[in-house]
Amino acid sequence: MTTATTNQAEAPLLSGRHGLGRDLAALAVILVLAVIGYLLFPNNLALLTRIMAIALLVLSLDLVTGYCGVATLGHAALFGSGAYAAGIAAVHFGITDPLLMVAAGIIGGALAGLVCGVVILRAHGLPQLVLSIALIHLFHEFANKASSWTGGSDGLAGIAPDPLFGIFAYDLWGRTAYVFAVVLLAIVFMFLRLVVRSPFGMLCRGIKEDPIRIQAMGGSPTIALLKMYVISGAVAGVGGALNAVSTQVVGLDSLSFTLSAESLVMLVLGGTGSLFGAVTGTIVFMLFEDLVSAANPFHWLTMVGALLIAVVLFAPKGLYGTVAEVLARRRGAGR
Amino acid sequence: MQTIFSIAVDALAYGMVLFVISIGLSVTLGLMRVVNLAHGAFAMIGGYIASYAARDLGVGYGLAVLIAVFGTIVIAIPIERLLYRRIYGRPELTQVLMTIGITFCIIGIANYVFGPTLKTIPLPPSLQGSADLGFRSIAVHRIFAIVCGLCVAAALWYAIERTAFGVRLRAAVDDAAMAAALGVRTEVIYAVSFAVAVGLAAFGGVVGAELLPVEPYYALRYMVTFLVVVSVGGAGSIPGALAACLLLGGIDTTGRYLMPEFGEFFFYLAVIAIVCVFPRGLAGRMK
Figure 1 (cartoon, rainbow over the protein chains, first blue to last red):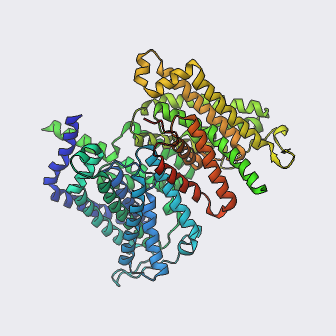
Figure 2: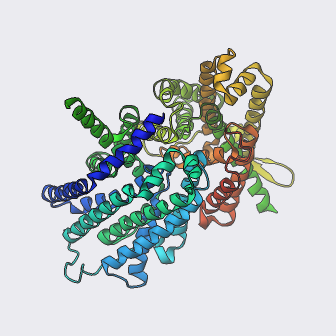
Figure 3: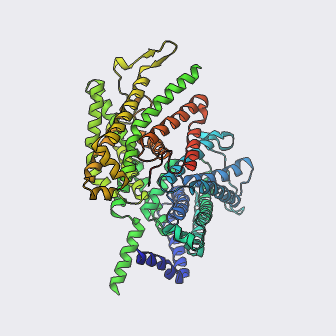
């Protein structure tokens, strides 16, 4: 047990030495993938943009579930709050600059993160899960009721973002939105790599391993987790705002239990506790969903179920985690 | 006065149906420590089988209930052997994912086999209509649901508190390793409790079909409700589950009657308040 913990703690420290190189490599991978996506699906950029918005949600879920060990089935609350904050800013206050809308999303998401964090972190285990489920339903009902602000079940329509920097208008093909999304995702990804490697990120990992020990060492688990929840809310808020800017409408489904559960599935599919895993899971899941649900939406549910069971049974570390492990083992054998 | 009375009857009937379905989840959660989100799916399977037996095969209501209960158990046994066995003792996140996966599969298959429409279970004439209490009349089916709930509660209380099986069950809940060392065959206890839990879920699904209509998304729609009830009541406690069901059933029904436009807002607000005040449930025995 002790050796396992030390090994896990050492691994990020070692990689931290080569951190800058890996950061640049990650940035390159994201940009190359973005270019490939643009070339492969020039007529389906809206899907790719949505994938990136959801990837931001899954990254933010990874922060609390993968790095802090908080099990939540209500993370779409942060995403939806960001989306509604950006949408309401645009529709009711006339703030239609895309960057300001993203800022509104960040603030909305962070506030929702604070509220959810305060409630969810009061409990552990099953009650924690139940609290998160109750919260997402509460947010959903609230958005449904406050229809003069949110448009209720019709959705908040009429969001018309200004051209980006006053130059690049949002066109029918979604090219501007796509580039905007790629840049946002890249910036957030780099920022999160810094957060995860920082002493604060290490503290959160320590809390996941053993909260009592962290407390004995003078750390405060609840405060640290709450901070992480607010950061996570801001990231999810960016994703929500991006979704609002690119689709120009915010629906109640962005605050749904289904989206929360799906984002958890994506995270686990890719692999928890790794930023690459979160992005991998989102891309694989969303592309797969687009393919299968176009054929038959009900078989889609059966497929997701079977996929989940298979991942839990055969690849508990997720796609990225399993591949990374195999590669590491092969490299170790080669030496 | 009229409104209060009808709210009370509906709340009682709803709470009892919730109790019958979720007590099985409470027992498996307390005993095997499995967060079984697929529990609602078993209730749904029961409803589907009863509907098929009563409408397409034309058997009586009582027989349809029996077929539903045993049919669901037969379906559940291989699932338990193949899938649940592997997640005993694993972290909660793993259990949640596996059981959500099972739920999704069952929904997809039910949709494929029975179609997306709502299924009804025809009631026998003796359960239709309403009974006159002198000052007020209430639907016989509501009384039937309440009586079923009370019978299940009494039978479970007797089985757990007064029989030899109950003694072994309680020993296994408190300390499975110690019970096994003393000669209790815990795997038999686990298998029997799982079967009983699934059977009760199916029974509740059939009896409650008037209040919780049977359709493919049943499993997903009420999954949360059942889990919430068990968590609020405290896993593995019959009085706790009963109290939680009546309390939450009352809040939900009152909210729907008096402020229908707010939907389930008050239900979830109450859940958050209760879980924050009693983190281990009303009768918390978990750990």
